[in-house]
Amino acid sequence: MIVSELVTEIRNRSGDANITETSVTGWTNTATRLVSTRTDWPFLLMTDDTDTTTSGTVEYTLPTDFRKMFSFRVGSSTSTEPEADEYSFIGYMEKNKAVNSISDSIAGYYINPTNSKYGIVPEPTTTGDKVYQKYYKHPTTVSAVSATPELPTTYHDIYLDFGLARYWEQEDELDKTVLYETKVENGIEAMKTEFVKSIGQLSRMRDVRELNTLNHPQGLNSVMTGRQ
Image (cartoon, rainbow, N blue to C red):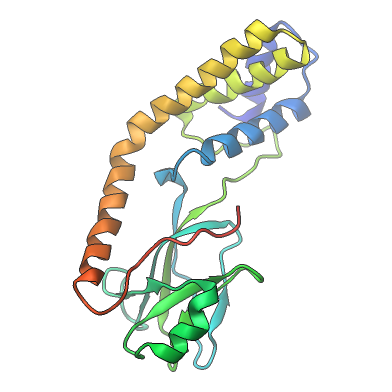
C-alpha cells in the first residue's frame, strides 16, 4: 500500500475522517524504524560497489544510509565481488596498533565513528581497486502520500495496526491500544518466521568465512555496527 491508502484505511477502521496525512506518515515512519531494529532484515541488506581505492588514501565515505557492515571486500579493477579478497574487521581504537604490528599481508577495514568513513589497512598502494561493501542500511522514510513504505507489501498490515494503536492511544482507549500493539508484535514475529531462513543463510555464510579465517593467519572477520 502507498501512504494515501494507509490514510484511507486507518480513517475507515477508526471511524475518524479527520486523521491527517501528516499523522499517518509519521506513524508509518516510526513503525518502519521499530521493525528495522528487531533483526538484520535481508530486505535491508545492500551492496555498494561504487568506490575504488586511491593510492595513499586510507579513509573513504560510507554510504549515506549505512547502519551496519556485513562484509567488506577489495579486488582488482576487473574483479567481481566473489573474486575480491575478504577483509577482516579492525576496531577503530585498534587500527594504529594493527598497522604497526601486523603483516602487510593481513588486510583489514575499520569504521571511523567520528566522520562516517571507513578505513582500509594497510594503506592502499594502488589506484582503481574495486571496493565491495555489503551492509545493512537504515530504512528509508516516506514523506509523500504517493510513496510506498519500506516493509514488504505482504506485511503492510503492520502499518495499519501501528497507526491504529497510536490513534487509540491518543484517544485514551487503552484496550484498543493494547489490541493493536499486540497485532503489531504478531506481525513482526510472522516476518521473522518468514525471513529466518534467509537470515540464517546469511549468518551461516559469515560463520563459514570466520571459520576459514581461523584456519588461516588472517584474523577474524566480524560485523561492525555503524550509526544507530
